[in-house]
Amino acid sequence: MTQDKQFLIDLSKMKMPFGKYLGTFLIDLPEHYIVWYKTKGFPKGKLGKQMELVYELKLNGLEDLVREIKKRY
Image 1 (cartoon, helix red, strand yellow):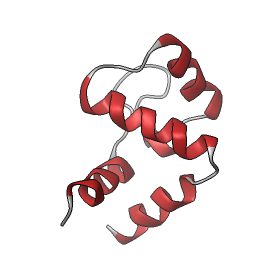
Image 2 (cartoon, rainbow, N blue to C red):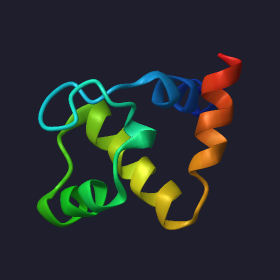
Image 3 (cartoon, rainbow, N blue to C red):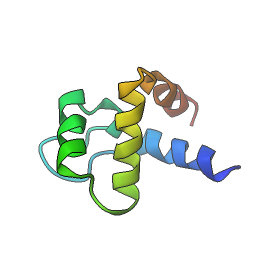
């Protein structure tokens, strides 16, 4: 399995570990919340990279790809 594929699988299963949306799948976070993080700065590490990808996916209307992966894995 490629590293990119595993990253997407991990993203599909990742839930917000803190804050107002604690326990919400990252892909299901409201767009305004992700945009707020984009302006504020994403967290460091893997969570930040995942949230940044969620931002890009939502920006391009591609979040359903991650939802499909979530169903398969």
